Length: 422
Image (cartoon, rainbow, N blue to C red; front, side, top):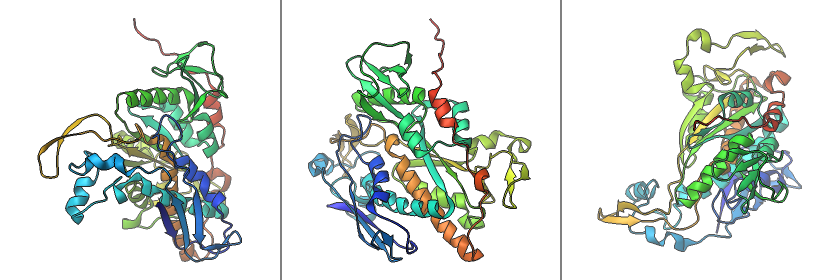
């Protein structure tokens, strides 16, 4: 029938309607472009309770999204054999039964509730602290944002609108090219820039592809790789980067409830996630202390500011007011149409091909999931700290935000030519 959620603990009198929640669900929904699953759902949300005349009542908020394009028969051939990479086997052993279609609670469809709840939390955080959360695709398979571009975006994060705009390509299937909003064309085969490229459709006229990578030259390579994998009936994974600006100081608890511990648990509870790192992450393990320490300087509002942000916005698991920077790794989608030599639940040899409509790469749809979970973790932490202080949390004010100029400048730069050996 559908997927819903109940959100408890939202303070009363927060302005809230479906229009506040729907944009994030629309960014998450399947059927956005040829880079994602062909399943076509509008994922239209309805608020069932907890609001009146556009304001929250302080009571639990119930929300519902109805399914429109489900096809249970797509899973008919998985009844005898567990799908490799999926939770069919572990759910069967744990519970003695399992959902007959789509994986049930192990399905990515359950993330609708997380995205909806996160949108509510995010609105409260913006109202109370001007806190903003931005998540973008930073790698797909072996295609990464160039290091200088990645660092520039982490220190001066793009807005959500910039991520969606600069990460959108248009496609001319007949002339075999992508084109970005600045008019630069790229090969559909490998995403390499074309100069000047064939005559054909403009950005406005082409079929849109949403990568959510705010650097068009990298987005083109990602789109080409995903389309190649779709033809090969295969899939791949990658990583997303999240930056939160306007962070209050003092969020997180000592020892077991450090903020990065809470974030890591939240992110790794999402389907298909396999890795989490904050700040410089594993790179910091290769650095010297003299390189890795973030030195202090005078900030604003009576607070200190760090000259660098290798730590990613926390010290001792407690937020410092700097930009909160972390990355989440996501594995390849397990449902692929290739024949896989596996076995049945009884251990007998079996060749399984997973039919249906599946994502060759889930990364373009992942940012709203990560943003939603981030918002819920941060709202819980803010309410906890406010209860302790008996007053609103402090922030670094403007110093806790980026300048908001890097994304547009980097996206508009002509792609760098890479010399190829004959």
